[in-house]
Length: 208
Image (cartoon, rainbow, N blue to C red; front, side, top):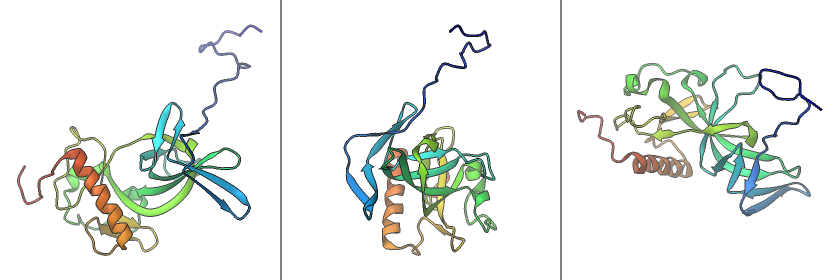
């Protein structure tokens, strides 16, 4: 059947490609809830031409009922293929300052001019979301408050200096002793990864 002329020259009755998330590699673990809901766990998946792995930080499209049009930010902690072949992710949320309560009073000893719109709070709050809500990867730098913020022009990306607990509404610095040991170790690894990527950042008491 001939197409009717249109500005984009696409026929209404011609099926368009469907973007579907697919797992990559071998199954690393199998889990199930009783005799139902078996899940195959993977280290990576592919969606919309991009490959995503455990530990990647990504932007997620907000749902239709969200109060914001800004994409969510999350870290991929687990990749699950469900019995219906849908790929679901266990993610760990980052919070934007405007989404955390109570909002910070004062500057907490930080250079807010340099952090500004780049600021995010890390959290240990986890959820399950569809892999097909992923928009693309993003960069997040974990920088303690004792270090200078890397300049955005040279090192684009978000900045994390604090961790937010949505239950207690508390903000803790990355260097706080108030975390459980496994949380401390996770934060330490993230800070060290940033240092490997950026190099040694100068201390705040040094003029740069």
